[in-house]
Length: 219
Image 1 (cartoon, rainbow, N blue to C red):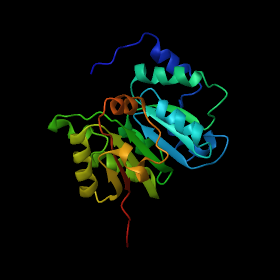
Image 2 (cartoon, one colour; image 1 turned 30 degrees about the vertical axis):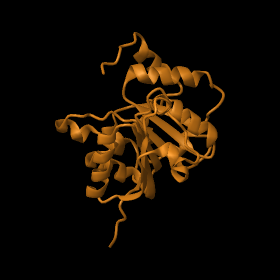
Image 3 (tube, one colour; image 1 turned 90 degrees about the vertical axis):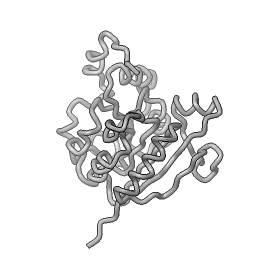
Image 4 (spheres, rainbow, N blue to C red; image 1 turned 45 degrees about the vertical axis):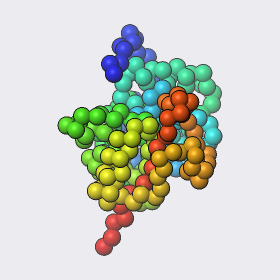
């Protein structure tokens, strides 16, 4: 899908106080960005930001970074964030390519990563671009703490099956998964929906979810 270019989006992003502009300088020091030093959770590919803003509101004891690489999409998140200017002090946005994560976050600096309704990149030759590919899992492994986790949700069955295989091949531990999240009480407890999730589930489409933990290093 081709994203519509929004005039002035780049300038608004560059001037927004809700967007981190010196990310590389904060590597290893992200806790200092927030009012309180708390666990750090990332959403990679946050879209318009509904999920991570709701998470930040419900969990004030956690610090959040929402990552988005497209200006036109990040602009919408900023606009929503501006409506809560004096709230959500535990949330910032980053405009970046997720391939650069190890350059921005230090080893063990991140506690959890959320991947929600990521681009499926359906062509086989684009498999390594999928956010659950072994190439991306390797990047996440570098920045997650030893007990760090990833939570992944999608409505795309093929992407979900691919992700299950990648988790296995990359040596990650699959802590739980379901092919029908909204009818799996133990995994749906406390679930925060994204815009896509609400849309697809209202049409009767099942939502798939998995939770995975990074490999345990021995020896």
